[in-house]
Amino acid sequence: MFSGFDFDVIQRALPYMGQGMLFTLGLTLLAMIGGIVLGTLFALMRLSSFTALSAPAGGYVNLLRSTPLILVIFWFYFLVPLAVKKLTGDPYAAGLGPFHSALIAFTLFEAAYYCEIIRAGIQSVPRGQVFAAYALGLTYRQSMMKVILPQAFRNMIPILLTQGIILFQDTSLVYVVGLTDFMGAASKVAQRDGRLVEMYLFAALIYFLMCYSASYFVKWLQARYNVGR
Amino acid sequence: MDFSVFFQPAFSGGGIYLDWVFSGIKWTLAVSIFAWIIAFSVGSALGMLRTTPLMILRAPAAAYVELFRNVPLLVQMFVWYFVLPEILPRAAGDWLKTQMPMPEVSNAILCLGFYTASRVAEQVRSGIQSIPRGQTDAALAMGLTLPQAYRHVLLPMAYRIVIPPLTSEFLTIFKNSSVALTIGVLELTAQARQISEYTYRTFEVFTVATVVYVLITLTVTVVMQRVEQKLRVPGYIGSAGK
Image (cartoon, rainbow over all chains, first blue to last red; front, side, top):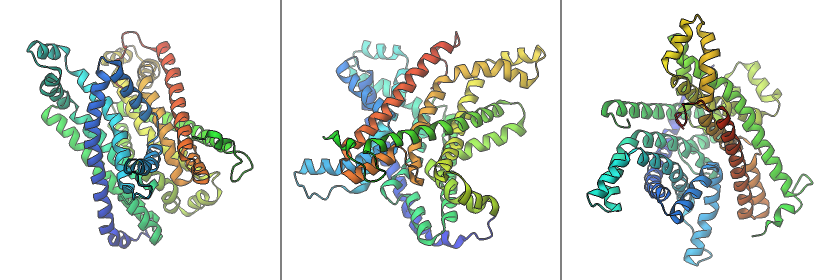
């Protein structure tokens, strides 16, 4: 089965694949941070008693959650350059490049999923905590920042990290706009050298090892520090 | 904004661009539904195996779930389409390459089905595990064999409990079917992209595609909410994790 397997092609491609992996990790990390920050804002909006705040946030989350990620990537690949031209007023503006389009797409897409996780996390904090915070004279902002969110985030750490692992896998879809992430690098080498079997199996193996150890780490974290219970 | 683009004669095929949209919807639904049949049956079997007391049945099912959950769908798609025909025995590989009907669509269905099976398995497992242990004990004490206990006691409860998470898994398959465009299946997203390349009406075309996805998602959600209300287990309201 592996008689014609060419390990040499993998070895030669390693530096290029390494760059791709850095790109993947960078995109994952930035989109995760942006997604959690935006997701927290959307969650607070969705939980607000003002319909003017909760309705748009709910609409946004439901819209993004019923659209395929690939379509969202295409949307922003098309919209971001237009927006840059509008904002700068320069019809020949160079734009931000595909990396920034992808980053914006992933951040806004993940924000919808993080919003639902964070909303559930906030709701898991007993209501008595809110009342106690208000009774102590804390404002809404203070009670959220000092009492509710710290407890909610502690409970949510495992789910937030698991969503991060899903995001890490999903970033491979930037392949469709031709970016060179880990998978993009694998497929470019695969096509250049005509070594599809080696490169795709190697990519699958690396993804598996990274995601498996990351999810193992999340389980360990849960058991060791008793977070998320 | 000019939605008349959909009524212009298409670049090829003789129809109008709206026909391309409908063809895309048809393939999106076909891939999703056939993949769901695989995902549901394989996933149910794996989920059941993971709850049996026999290690020799549990371990392979657990390995399957870990393997398919920890490799990105796009990579799996390429492995099914490009790698599998090369590493199988020659005769099978040749059949895949030359004889298999509609190779892109078939591979996309197999890939999505077996990928989602790992997620369905986890839902079915958590459904079975959410049933109090006493029910299994009672069933066995009454003289049912283990397969009978699954067939008559555990599964009828478990499936009713996991309807909401299984609905969202179906919607995931439906959205993930767009990944099939990477191996050349002309489903809805691919058709939208193709029309926008021929007409430069990207905004209108993507809007229509998005609306179609949202409408189908809404329809499935509403129908399944009805089904869930009909089949809800008394005393279990809202107890199944989403």
